[in-house]
Length: 298
Image (cartoon, rainbow, N blue to C red; front, top):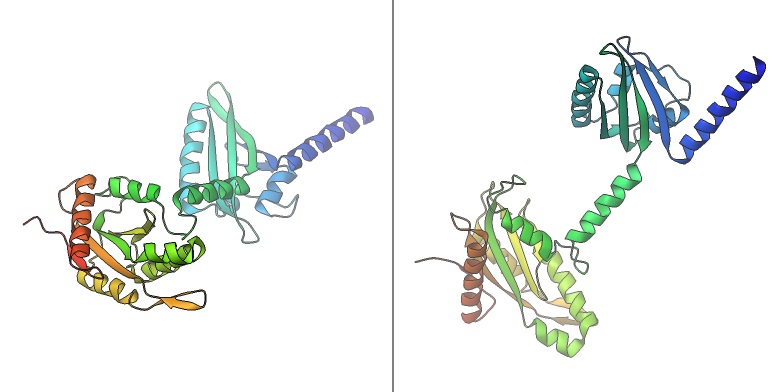
């Protein structure tokens, strides 16, 4: 008997060490008593003292509301069918830290009646953060930190907000006046600095909820939120006024103006809205630059 107990302790020790290395904890819950059992890995994930008393209601309060709702629905279905599920949940630990964990669950049953649900919980917080960083990099202009052409196109294609719930109100296309001269005479280092500062000014001028993007060399765009009223005349004059102030490049100040073309979303598709704004931008440039035009079909 002593040898058997020693072997059991050794196996448990190996399990705990392997679980800690993989940031995985093993859990089980008896049914219908709802009595929980955790390995150290789960205690560590929730940042609770190892071996402390755990009650399912208390741990459930540590789930983010939406994660709790989804997990409870999946759990109820698995218990009803003696099935299983996998789910990524967001929690706030006992020490107040935000974490993500991956839950795997399987239900044991006797004669179709669930008696136990058990599985693993794994800390995937870093994995989630890495995925979010990769997503942001894929949608961000590296130079200016604004949205890039890819994100701009995706938002423009969802013109009426059917996918993300944010319809476009107006499309503002912005070209920098005399930027080529700066790039050619001062070089790309100062040219890049000029673009960065131009992006900062546009971000400062844009209304809350608007998407500000760099869509080309010295081409920028703003997509306003269609759920909010935006005074496009005021927005345009604010942007043009912001570019009346010279930009510090090295030891000298240089003036870089802005020309704007604006089109309002109506019943047209995304391509047509872009063409309308582009036509308005062409009209603004033809008028002498440093001004704005609103597209009119008349």
